[in-house]
Image 1 (cartoon, rainbow, N blue to C red):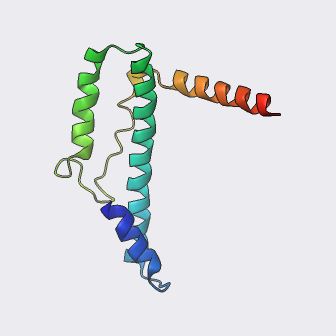
Image 2: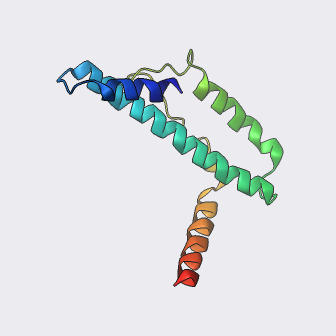
Amino acid sequence: DELTAEDQQLMSKKPSKNSKEEANLTFNKRVLDAHRWHINKLERLQRKLNNEDVDVESLDALKESLILYMNEEVNQRTAETFMDYDDVYDDFKLEEVEDYLATGKEKDDEEEK
């Protein structure tokens, strides 16, 4: 992944007070965090799909939003214009999956004791 490679290159350099490099590093971290956040949400959505809790036809709007999110011409990779698209999962009630997973993990932790 080119963002990870760029981060490693910037971090491997000797520490400097170059604010542009620091800004690039900070922005790359923001983009990577956004990607990881989307991956997490998609994994939760997949669980709901596997349990048939989501209508497949309802995914069309999500698909279009994710295409826009990934399109660098539309969602430019600059600190000023980058959009997280963090509201595209609101209709799927993915917090229910999170609650279930947290409850399941707590039960597993109790059983291990």
